[in-house]
Image 1: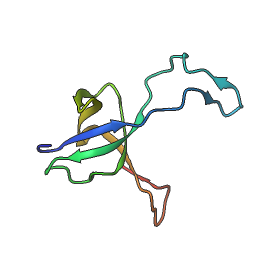
Image 2: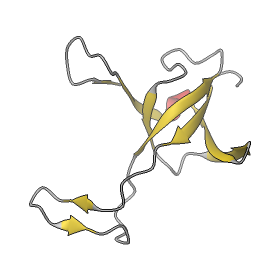
Image 3: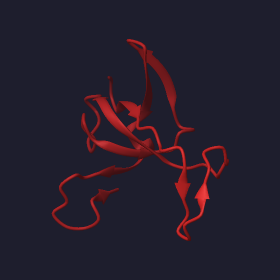
Length: 97
C-alpha cells in the first residue's frame, strides 16, 4: 500500500441484532448508515496511527473495493477511519480516536 492507504477486510456482522429493550431486529431491516468494523491487512508507509492487524471502525460508503486471490478487500485512507480498537487497554474504553 502507498502513502496513507489501508487495505481492510470487513468483519461480517451477525444477521440479527437485539435492541436494548430486547426486541429482535431482523437482518432485512434497513437502518440508517452504520459504521462497520474491519481488520487492517496492509498499511502504507504514510499511515501514522494504524498498523497491520488493527481493528478499525469506518463508514462503508467511503470505500473502494478490490478483489485479491478471490477475497474482497476495501481500500481506505487513514483519515476515513473513525476509531481503532485497542485489545489491551491500559485505561479507558479500549477505543481511541
